[in-house]
Amino acid sequence: MDDFKLQLAFQAMSTVTTPLQALKIYEKNFNVLKDWRFICASGDDHGPFKLKNKVIDDVVGIRSIFKGQSLWVIDASMVEKEGTVPYLAGTGIYFDSNAASYIYTH
Image (cartoon, rainbow, N blue to C red; front, side, top):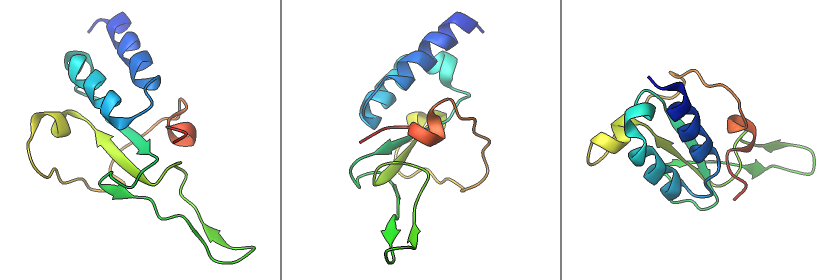
């Protein structure tokens, strides 16, 4: 695999502002990204995985590490299949290169 093409694809994926933009870049760079999974946070609740952030009182709250109201998973399964794609939570290994702490600010 050409490491430079992979780096360019990663850079492109890290500069998008919406999950739709991320999906388009993933599809365009599918040959180099097909073994990678991206989690994109969205400011709206249209994503398949809803984020439940709740303030219980002035001191206690439940908060996701992701910003936004929902998450999208972009990977080869999502791009290659039509309809619902099942995902099991907690089965992946993720590294933080601005991913978990900042994914999107929307």
